[in-house]
Every structure is written in C-alpha cells, then in structure tokens.
Image 1: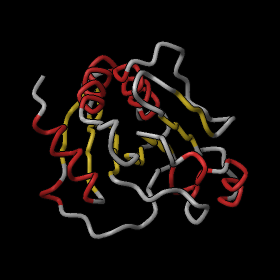
Image 2 (image 1 turned 90 degrees about the vertical axis):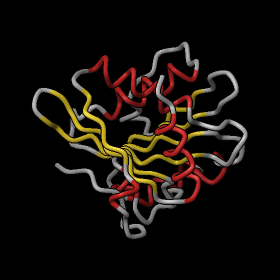
Image 3 (image 1 turned 30 degrees about the horizontal axis):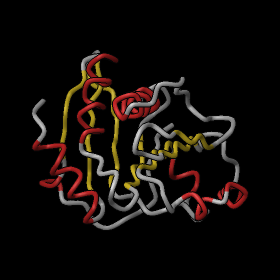
Length: 173
C-alpha cells in the first residue's frame, strides 16, 4: 500500500534532495543530519513521512529523535496514534496514522493543543488523516525501495521546509 500525503502545492523537482541509504545504519546516520537542521527556536517543523510498510519511516523517526537527544525507547505509535517526546530543548510529536479508520478520530487527540511549544512533528501515513485537522506539511520525506536499500527524497512544501532542506543540504558532517 502506498503512502501519499494529501495534495499540496506544486512540487519543484529541482528543490528536492535525494539520497540513497544502503541500510538501517545509513538511515540512522542521515537522520542525525536531518536532526541537526531542526531549529528549536522556530515554528514547529512538520514532516510527512511517506513510504510503504517497512520502508523505514519509523527507523528514520527513531534516528531523528535519538540525534536530538531522546534517551528513552522510541517506538512507532501505531496503536496510540500519538507519542510525545521531550529530548533536551525540543518537544517532538510522532504520529502514526496507519490504523486510523476515519480522519475525524484525530479530533480526540487535540492536535491544535499540541502545536504551541512543539519543535518537530513526524507524521507517518498522513493521507489517512487528510481532512482531520493535521497541520500542513513543511516537507515530505519519502522512502522508496531501491535495490538492497532505499531512496530518501525530501520535498519542501513551505518556506520553513525550504529553509530546513537548505540547512540539511549544507550540512556535510
């Protein structure tokens, strides 16, 4: 089953970043690079994570959280829908909407109440929450199978998303 976010503005292929990730370790290393570009003092950065089951969305989310300093276990919130983490200097919300039956179920989570004070939203299976009050994406992070690994493609969808992608692209560590 493919995971496509809700329709957004037209995408400029020249504005994307594409990286081949050979294995889980490469995914975790690249997640550290993504985390370094998150500005804890700005508006919350909303990332829609897309890809088929097993594509590596949760691994990427775990890598981001660990790179931000999260020390507790990081698991996909498939059954709870929402997990909140507070690594030093951040407040991160991780949503996994795979089991969501109806976007109206999101209302019970009080998503608008979570926006203030958060620095990063990681939303897996965002298309299942379309029309249910999800914040708009600043960037889509897509993971697609390629050979023995996967291709990660980042497409910015807002000015903050473009700024974040620029910071990611400039980080060569």
